[in-house]
Amino acid sequence: MTPRRSPSPAPAAVAAGTVAAAAATTVALAVAAGAVAADGPKGDRELGQYLSSECVTCHQISGRYDGIPPIVGWPEDSFVEILGQYRDKTRENPVMRSIAVKFSDEEIAALAAYFGSLKPQTD
Ligand code: HEC
Image 1 (cartoon, rainbow, N blue to C red):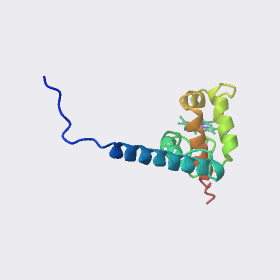
Image 2 (cartoon, rainbow, N blue to C red; image 1 turned 90 degrees about the horizontal axis):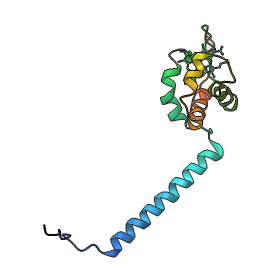
Image 3 (spheres, rainbow, N blue to C red; image 1 turned 30 degrees about the horizontal axis):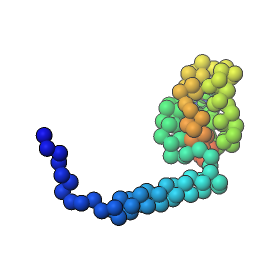
Image 4 (cartoon, rainbow, N blue to C red; image 1 turned 90 degrees about the vertical axis):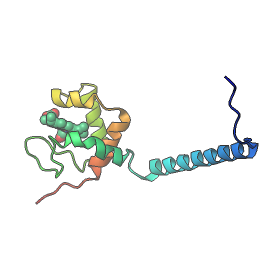
């Protein structure tokens, strides 16, 4: 086995350029994340929408009451608090407890942001 030669010399400038580009990307991401935390919803709405598919098999996305309480249009803080209570089993309901335990804080915040952004339909 002979060690493979690199087909072209790797100039230090290329490597340095890559590092600089990576650093610039990191800064841009940090700035974007900071902006969201500052004035957007606290949770990631897109993640919440993705996770919501399970919830809407029971809860009406329209916000109507059909025996199961509506969960749209809530303030994010209340939503997070209540799901947290199901998760740590200080709030009764075996169904919601078994659902809530699956989610991290971040995922609960995402669900709160998504459902909180929906408007209940009244007609
Ligand atoms: C299998 C049906 C079912 C699914 C799926 C479900 N829920 Fe529920 N959920 C209920 C029921 C029933 C209640 C009422 C429980 C009670 O009386 O405490 C409830 C209550 C709640 C409440 C409190 C409502 C209130 O007015 O007190 C919230 C918030 C909630 N669910 C969020 C969610 C979220 C978020 C999801 C998806 C991650 C979800 N639920 C999935 C059946 C379900």
